[in-house]
Image (cartoon, rainbow, N blue to C red):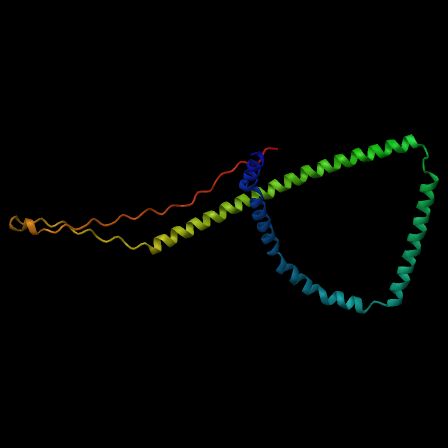
Amino acid sequence: MAITDDLRKTLSDPTPLYFAAGTADLALQQARKVPALVEQLRAEAPARIEAVRNTDPKAVQERATVRVRETQETLQAKVGEILGTLDTDLKKLGENAQDLALRGVGIAAEYAVKARETYERVAERGEQTVKTWRGEAAEGIEDIAVAVEPAPEPKPEPVEPKADTESAAVKRPAPAKKAPVRKPTAKKTTPPAK
């Protein structure tokens, strides 16, 4: 029974759907910036292409060779320094390893908290986005209902039967009442406990 309850709870929790809606909203917001970036790249591209064309390959090769030599010398110096100062005390190495492990756990916990906070913020944004979408949809449905619903016809005045024709009076049926248009209501959910 516990598995069924867990599945029911998991499948009825709207937070992942709100997260997806929030992500879609953020993606749409970022996509709106793309045309400006494309125009900027289009404007800068000719100058960059010309700079590449005017570059001397031999000069580039010489600079790369100098950089490689400098990096190799720096690396050899650092390795020599590290090997020279390497502490062989096993107790100290053990303490350092334990300290690094504890730091790693602390950092992992911090990232987990930040990830959860980010997830909740995006889910809240998604919930607001869904509420906005539902509001617009409800207004649209209401507008359609008003446009489709015919104008009410004027009610005919009842005719009083004459004394000699009372038996020939015809009763008219009352017009049918139409159901009022209902707006869908948004379901309020509470965020999961931390």
